[in-house]
Every structure is written in C-alpha cells, then in structure tokens.
Length: 442
Image 1 (cartoon, rainbow, N blue to C red):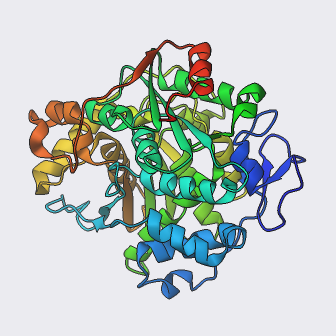
Image 2 (image 1 turned 90 degrees about the vertical axis):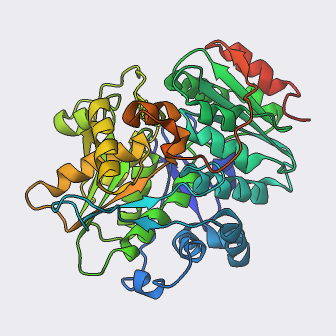
Image 3 (image 1 turned 120 degrees about the vertical axis):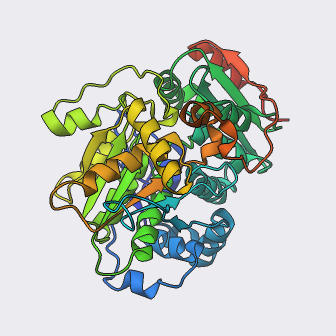
C-alpha cells in the first residue's frame, strides 16, 4: 500500500496496522488478508447540526454529513456538485393512515425508493460511481465495477453506470430468487453492462466477486472495483438517511430506526451516524430467516448459513458482508438489536397496513414494519419508529399477488424491457473470462 492521504485514512478491521487512503481503497475494496476497510477517524458533528440543516434539501444535508469524510479529498465544490447530481429525487417520510391506536402516529416509512432503480441502493451507488470516476479518471480512464446482487444493488449499479464514459459494469445475480422486475433492471441490454445470471445463491455470487477482487492478475488487466457495500464509500453515502429521518420527527420525541437488513451495510451506516453524534433511542436490524445476526446477538455464536429463498429476496443472505463493520461500530457504542420476521409475518404486515389505509409496502419494508410494531409494543419503547422503505413495492409483483391476489395494486414507475443476461454456472473461470474479454466495452 502506498502512503495514504492524511485527509482520509482507512484501516482494516482484521489488521490494525494496515491503512490506506481513498484512492487505494477504491482500487482495493477488500484489504489484503481479509477484513473490511473502515475510516480511522469518525468525525463528530456539532450538537446543533440538525437544527442548522432543518430546511436544507436532501442533497445539501447529505453534503454536510458526508463532507467531513470526503470534502477535503474531492474539494467542497466538487462534493457539492456530485451530491446534487446523485441525490436529485425526493426522500419523503410517509405516515400510513388508519392504523390501530397503538401504532397510529408512531410508525412512519422513510421512502428511499424514488431514484432511478426504485430502491435505496441508488443513493450510495450513484455517489460511488461519481466519486470513483473523479478520483481515478486521470490515472485510470477505464475501469470495471463488479457487483453481486440479491436484487436491488444490481439495478442501481446498471442505472448508475449506464452511459458513463470508461466505466464497465459486470453484475452477478442468482438465477432463482430475483423478481422479474429486478431482473429487467439488472439485465436489460446496455452497451457497457454485462449481467451474469449465476446458477447459485447470492452468497455464491458474493464469493465469486470477492475471489475476483483478490485476483492480482485480473487487477493488472485494468482496475477492478466493487459497488457492493464492502466498499466503504457506499456506506458513507448512506449515513445521511438517519440524519434525515431524525430531522423529520418532532424534536423531543425519542426515535427508533428500524432497518430491513441483509448484508448489514445500511444498518451499519446508521450505527456510523450514531458514532458521529446522531441521537437515536434504538436501532433495530430487521432480518428474514436467513440472517445469522439475531442468533449472534442472542448467543454470541456466529453461524453463517446457506441462504434459502424468501419473499424478502434482497435480504436472502446467510453470510453478511458488513458484519465486521457493524460489530466494530457497535463495540463501545450505542446498542444495536436484531429480530427475525418470517414470510407469514411479512405477508400479514403487508395486508394489515394496506387494509388500514391503503398503503402498500414491499416485502422488505414489511419486515421492518413488523419489527417496529413489536418494538413499540414492548416495555420502555421509544415514542416513534421510522422504518426504512427500501424498495418500491411494484418491484415484487409475485409477492403482491400472494399478499393481495393482485399484482397491480402498485404500478412500477418505469419501463421493463426483456432481460438479456449471460447465463453461467457457479464458476469462477466463466467470470474471469468475462472480465478479461471486451464484453461491455461496446
């Protein structure tokens, strides 16, 4: 590793002696020898930060939150421009109507799905691609962004990279478990995108990506970067979510944030926000049956498992990438809890909320909603809970059909052309061939 910039320095979670600057981290998203990169210094924002930014638009708020990490690296004017480009869509807090008295006025949904791919991943990936191009363009005018997806990351990556000069995206997704809407977004024909439909699970796709990133011969061919949440810039880009949620809830009311969680990047970003000074009464990682996190927090034993398909498919992850970061930011800091919500409870929550006031949730958001209901019904609960609404419900027509008997209860806000993936086995050789080829360079 070359000498890191003094303005922003990262350290490996598995080797405290291994440090790197932003350029090195972008070029080597996984530290040599394993672990994950985390910032050496976590900045503390002033006590009046939210009051000072009460009337800022989301892009300006995000710029102020991210600034202590990236402003000196990029220059404040560049960071401002990148945030305005990346975060140019609404981020509303919605309070569903007609809820039972115990929940009325106490649970809201922060809708993070109004970007181009209709999922929360748009925020982080759009900023990441722009930051990467800015930092590397002089030395590396061409590079490949490699990503594994269980659903939503892939669509965000292909949307963010589409038409960006010099950038090729190679996206791996499991052949079974991705919704037709998600597959259309991931694998529609684009000149600089290669979509690989893998005969395996998301965990298999993730393992292939990690192996490729560690392959020095591939990285010598051209820079090989990742848009998965193992890239720390992606997590930094998601930290503003929690500050935005807090400023939309009346002052003086205690708040819990409930995050539908799979790879643990988003819940890790909220915990990072708390280490920066954000006051939250509770943080809950709401998971489906695949996650090892609830068991780990309950027993202290970590048992990764092979994931099985559920209705909340983007969270079908049995070996979450960001566990090391979440544990690092949890240690000596505010508590994080985790609960499991199964498919039956997910469907019940979707039906209950729609029946009460007509609000339709995606299955992942419904996992968070059920966890929020249970939290608010417990002793010593906070005044309110904000659930992160992670994806547009119309991305999951099969789940809507199962929940309501009608997939048209929510309309997708965009075109859905037929997918055109390259089908491969769970085979590193096939991935390596694609990366070394000219595919996606048209």
